[in-house]
Image (cartoon, rainbow, N blue to C red; front, side, top):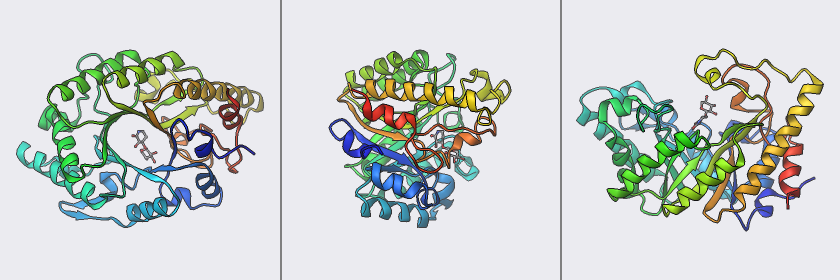
Length: 334
Ligand code: XIL
């Protein structure tokens, strides 16, 4: 077996895993998260689609269960996420701009207040960066209705509700230098205006060949240079090296390889090398305080449905909860 990851990396960063109660209570995942994690992120049950029933009406039950589980088992909670263009009820976006802004601020205030003292940090704004060079900002409904200031409104509302919670902007693709530069343009604008912001979350949904660890190294250094903390928030290493277009069009995605023993063995080997290379970079950054995998074990991963339905095994533990070559690679690494 391998050492507890939370102990092995204690001098560097917390080890987190993402799951909802259904994801961490099953017999495969439960021993894994209890042994290895000292941080937890709700995979879905902290999102507006789960919490926000109607304006001012909330469904706290599942999220409260997760927060209690974390407190009972020595884990901090990363709150994910308050303001996103997905998994948010349509009624958030109805009415005048003034009404939408007030609704956003009220939602952030109510949720952050509810979890005050129980959630260490929030992904206040998720995926606000554009995927192309047309703009720094994703052309989301938030942007269309409120303009770029929606980010500031959400961050200020979160800070005033819980001054002790650390506030993050979280995004995927920070390992792509062009997209990362757009994110940092947004960050610089916020800092110039004195908007409360403590850190950048790097999702790091990666594959066995991309990104190069050097890109991650550069991004982490650049964030630290702005006086901000880094978190790796959603790490997984897909077995598939899909073309970028696959994510948008769902065509051109690689076919399922999990039935082919030869291809699968090669992919798991490459995955272990990628995990090791990434953790070797992670350990060099004092500004990196938390590393979370997006899931616990391969029995349950969002990548079995995204971008297409196919077998995938992107995590450190296999479908029985046993450590994979990747888990050995990161604990053996010098
Ligand atoms: C995903 C969950 O894993 C899925 O269960 C859900 O159906 C969709 O959302 N980026 C994020 C996460 O910030 O919230 C997403 O989580 C994965 C991509």
